[in-house]
Length: 454
Image 1: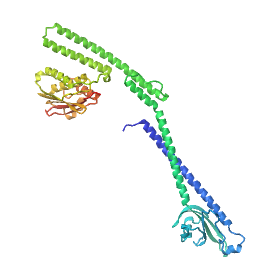
Image 2 (image 1 turned 135 degrees about the vertical axis):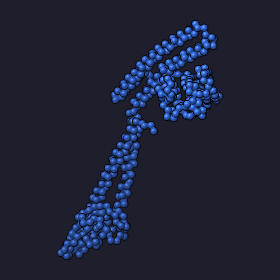
Image 3 (image 1 turned 90 degrees about the vertical axis):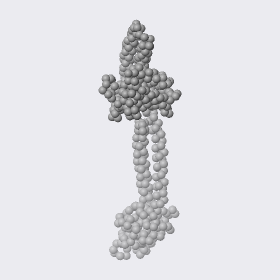
Image 4 (image 1 turned 180 degrees about the vertical axis):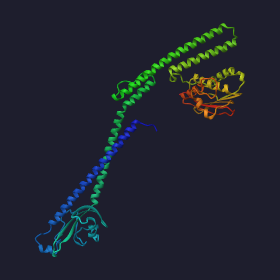
């Protein structure tokens, strides 16, 4: 997968934003729960105060005999139930509305297990058989008829189901709001990231224009942080142009020198008493050398993108090379078998194919003992060229190395650049070359080249 700077920046910011939104939503929800709990505690405290205030303080004797008889939970919209428990677990008084709590047996022992021996306590607890309740308890001691004080716990209970539903609704409200805010920030972040990286996109577009030779350098109207980069790239481009110019001058000098020597050869041939056949052969070779010089000169100076790419028929090019090889290696008396399909097309320069096949055929004739097979086939959108000989072959350990510049598979004199030139030409057309064992006993070269011009 191709890495993207825009994706990395956006993903990092979205991740940080998601963590921040989660933290803020969690804090807001915790604050809501704490506030709800405080309000509930305050309401139940007020309910407890009203409960004690309902007792008639004037009836002392009645209070001593029945100390909680006057207690009553008042209010039209009462939300709490009450119970008074003794330390022993006995229930001394209760005011419970009809509902699940009314049917609970042994309520006081359960409540004692929840609030313990605290003087005052507020908590959320679970009553078996009734569900979750908020409990507000108060511990107090009184002297009744006996001189020994007695300890009681008065407990108010409020169902937690409604408050839990409100809490759950608030939680999802917070989440929905956080998601909407996050989505809005994400869209804004995507836009700002694209806007922030717009300069890099513009730089890429200008580099493409430079590669297409529609401009010579990058503009200098980029942001301050990018100016060192654009300056370095412009300097690199300027150095490249200077080097190309020097290379062009050298190639021009070389071409001029060679053309002068070729003209001298032609003049010498005209003066010598040569047969017409010999003169024609020498003229053909001189013209071929001139074409090769011009081809390499154009390729080195202009680059392959400026050469024509109309395509050519590979058969005549190969036949011309085979005729030349037959004359050069006529002393070896090699049996050549050439096969090809009809209506073949090489989507490239004829000179490239000439250079490529010239090197391969020269090597094949040089190392072959008595037989060479050459086949040109159409394979979908590719031109497949297979060249096999009965020579010594190339060992598997050397097959990748011989395609590199300066490496030879034998110990003969030479620069070791023939096959590397072939590999470079094939790579320039996004083709492929492979070396294997030939059925004839030597090496087999298999080439794939584009067969249809774009």
